[in-house]
Length: 458
Image (cartoon, rainbow, N blue to C red; front, top):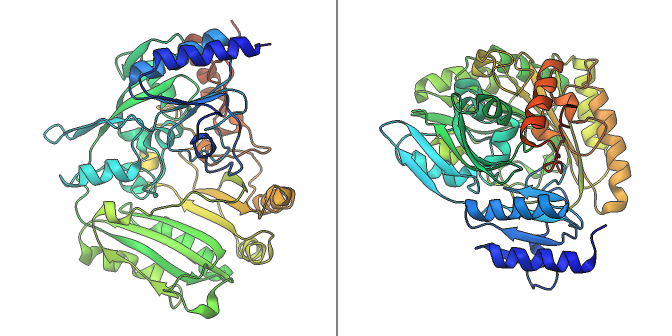
């Protein structure tokens, strides 16, 4: 057990060695600094270290390894399981690593791990170039990339990891490694989908695509089984230039939907087409034809403008995820009913049809598995307070059962605390290879406050 004196010595060491900011419970901004999206009540870390540079990351990694104190690493703070904070441990906050170097001629960008999707995309879009980082501007690029990265450009250009060319990573021994397909290829393979199990990524180099003209936005449709299943069918039949998201949710009090629909289930959909506007009109017509839209906010705009902003929720929530192949009208109706009658202030079931460029990469080429799956889900149920989480959990588990194809396969970036574990996020062969890479680079399992991949036995 670590004594109080040893903990004080650890804090003194960090204040001496770190160029950034070390925040403890005695500091006025501690209460806010300890918060992350999935834990609005916060945790009580020993200290939050806001790194200024890679040397700071090395200092924190070395201090955590040598002291035995639990280490949590935070990028954008969007972990569905709340892994960006920890009780009685160290939080390494990399959000200050904002370096950005765009090479227009080579069509690459070297981006600091602390950048958000919005910051990176806005900068590269000035040159007509972009990398696909999810669908929300506020998300941190490091977390979404390490888990795979699904977003508004996935069917056209692939997942974020498919654009990752290299990474700077601080491993458990405190060393800085530059990895790519030729330099430490096993580690580079594991970083592309294996999460934060192998080190702290401090910078990444991405391919930039000439995205050109984009058309997209929000299309709100009535929530009926016919419209929902029709939307999924249209999304699968659409050319790869179209990426879609459909979310079943009680309609919030937004001004662009008639008040009579507020509070009742609707299909809040997002569509993005890459290509000329005249082609977009034709390709998106089948979605508009499913039913008279309750709102149609689709427009031609730069990709950077199509990324949504997201405020961090102030309420606790439970989340679930899986992959599945098809949705019949009967379970579609049950999902809609579940959203309408569930507990808490908000419930949602989000479905993303995959395919296109996501499936172009060979299975096993990256640590992200299940590229052949048709649809990925994300379910969330908020509670007014922690006392309501049991009811939210029951709702989320029952809703997920309606999408169950007989296995527990899930997308690691969407997995919260619950019955699905890290091993469910990878095919068996991928899991075993990840454990071997873990044993090579983090045999002591320093990076375990995540969806943990245990090192293979020596």
